[in-house]
Length: 375
Ligand code: UD1
Ligand code: UDP
Image 1 (cartoon, rainbow, N blue to C red):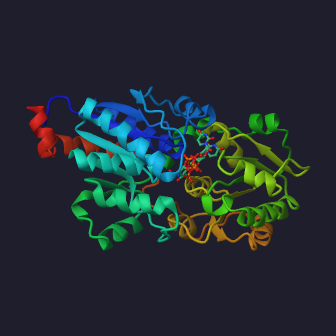
Image 2: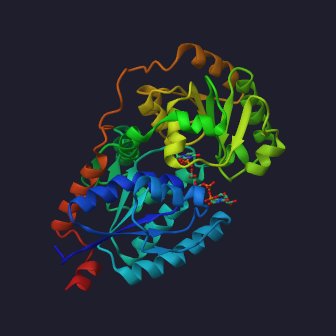
Image 3: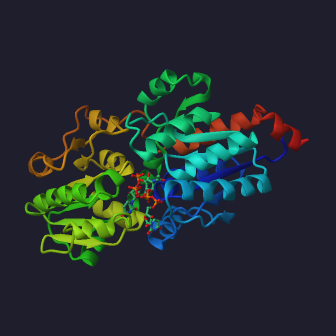
């Protein structure tokens, strides 16, 4: 093994922070040298800083400050910023998470610089290439050297795309590790009091481009959420994307509808834990509601996380079917089809990933370029 090899984590957006925290902890326990590069894709305190505090993540060694932009402009800024950082730090391995633009850019940069990479949350597929995330997933998995899968169906997706099974490890779900670690802190009462919520309520999060970017789609969605609000008070911690469009479509404070800024990780999951129902188009929230046993209605035509439907509390709905589905879920609760959580969603994915990385570093699996530099 190269002397004291460095592992770099490239993080940019809210869900990255949640997935990385258990891996960073696992590597720290094994004494592996590591650092976080924050790309700055998310930059508002409520989309970034609050997660570092809530999850106990160490300060990034660099923040590239790329900010927002069109896909091309944001990705271009990510590519040039990350190339400099990777050349400066010469990591033995770069770890990327999920499916955001920061993930895609880091994988491309490392592939061109012959720096080995690991992808946490490999093999998820919605089979919908209209989603920017699906494009990011396919490219990231094609170029990764180590692939960490969170659920079994990912293995066949990767095999079908010709990924060498020797590179793939089924390790469980680090997002669920973070949730396990936060459980003792999840108390709905103080958040409910702060937001002025009493009794039964639903929580909604909406930010997918297909739902919020187009005015017509946004109007349909908002009408559907208003249909839920007729049945139960709805709190919406609103992602900055599409805020304006959703407001124009009628998503504004009303007697049974409360629109608030995005919540910090612990506050958000506290609110979800106490909710009778969640309505979402988030990826991570589908998994967290499965783990917490809260009924979840996902307003999307597909999901890259079907295990939350087969083993969890998640159902796919259209805007047209949302109000009736909400009425049923509020009546039935969250009976899970299998009655058990997905395999390996046990809070130990981070240590599993760390052990695979440790063994990989020990086996001197470094690229020829990295080996040359290490001598
Ligand atoms: C990104 C990911 C998406 C993920 C989401 C998690 C991509 C292609 N998409 O979407 O997969 O589900 O993060 O939350 O990477 N903005 C702010 N403050 C911020 C960040 C963003 O106001 O701190 C606003 C800006 O107007 C920006 C818009 O949100 O243009 C979209 O941000 P961006 O990072 O491009 O994509 P997300 O929609 O956040
Ligand atoms: N989340 C949060 N505050 C909020 C909304 C979401 O802390 O107001 C957390 C949520 O618990 C999950 C992560 O953010 O851990 C999911 O991020 P998001 O839905 O933005 O992205 P996706 O998972 O869809 O990529």
